[in-house]
Image 1 (cartoon, rainbow, N blue to C red):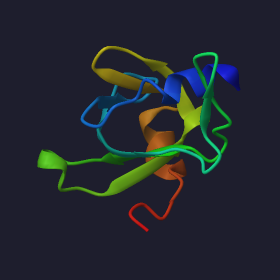
Image 2: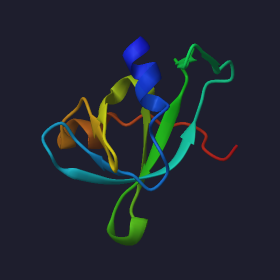
Image 3: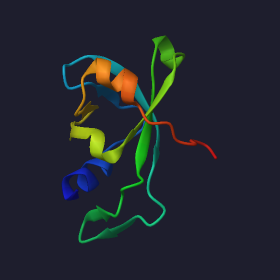
Image 4: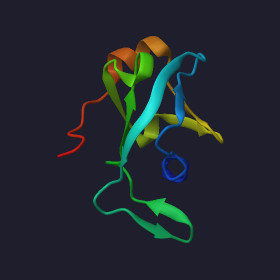
Length: 100
């Protein structure tokens, strides 16, 4: 859990999002942190309810996918890599009330 806490803190809007098998899903549109999120010794915690939204399709005009923080495998300078494959990501994206 501590690893996903650190990783969600590195995610930024506009980053490219890739599945574990290297397929691009889209870009990060929005990030939501859990209501009780705070920083303790440089670590974001707790973030069980933290998630981010990915806009898909050309120019981000496709569907929107939402993923919880624990679905992040790695975060690089300009990319987020998920723990699931492209097919799994398309089928298991969790829906959250972004913007509410």
